[in-house]
Length: 115
Image (tube, rainbow, N blue to C red; front, side):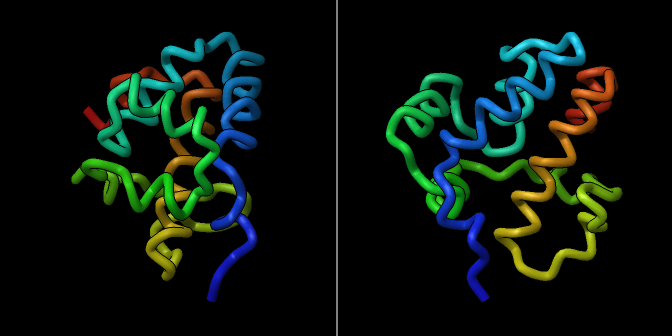
């Protein structure tokens, strides 16, 4: 089953992530660190993905190295338990959402990054 969010441009959601964390006093650099940790993109490659307008499906499909500790991302985001999401792409999107939520809630970066 293909969800609408799969075809949504990552670049259209990224500013919302920035806005969400900034409202809580976190920086775009911290957000980028979280995204690069999860996906394996370098900061430069992340910016290229944003600039190129790829959709979520492509963004995650082209991710150089999804972090092995991503499996440690557990909990509820948008009323959905992340670890219970069956579709692999949707789970990756929810994992990213969960990390952004934790960052916005003031969690220490080391904890967000499962260090």
